[in-house]
Length: 370
Image (cartoon, rainbow, N blue to C red; front, side, top):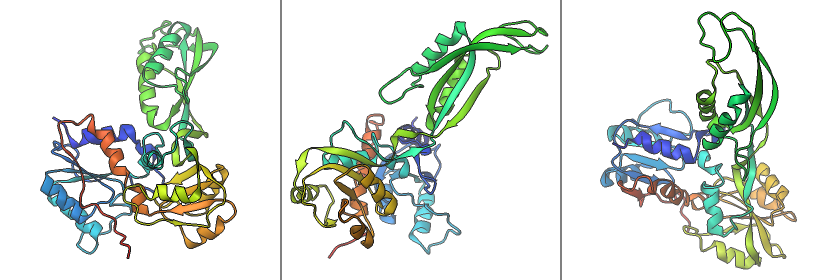
């Protein structure tokens, strides 16, 4: 039996909740994850129309990009669409899960990766525009020389100790470990009451936050000691595949007008806004779906060396501030994140082939243009 919780676990393997921004509320919004899965609906937004479509199509799990519970509810009435959606979902046993900045920040298979594909950026050389920091730990333990290779092999088999394109990364140094086994212990080395001195290695690996619990479990399973000693040390470094936005290059230079015409072919795009057109061709592109305007985002786009920065929406002054430094293009918040539905379908379709995965027809842009 496949449960809703099983699907959520699959989503979080692809888009760990540890990737989300501090202000966000990605994850389970409403519902019982232990109930058997009947069908999956995918959307950008959670609306009453989308939830009614879930009932019509027999889906009891809605996976949306934007969280319906972005801010806490103080009551559950019918005053707002958020309250009505939560009440509707509870009445109809529909679980709602939001995959928001946890997916925005995953730049190898997340929303901005898919947007980069639509724009046509080359796959090689892409990087996060604003890498996340402080999401790594140095895990080091002390182990007899005779067991150190087995621990390193266990780490590598579990995918622990990867850095960029390298696997099996670790650091070791030798030393002497001292301990005195107590009367109730079961020491691998030594005897009760006697002070032991053992030639040991300190084995250190770099672990992303979302893999820390797995790394600790691997350490405990491979370590010969009854009570292994280890240290978990936070490391402030840029994450190589997690962060807001993407920077990449087009296969070849494009004239600004030709680039605008190219963007106009992206599904869902109804209109494009932009600052003064540059006179030079476009090659290096920075992008961030959704609300990627503002000083911090634009500063990082300029710092990346991009010719153009593409996002969903920006403020009036942003188009002025970039003049002479960067070409700013926006084509709508909803439009820039519409690819989230394809992203979610690709993440789930292979593993849940026995279940129908629907892309919502009722999930439409809340902004209308005249």
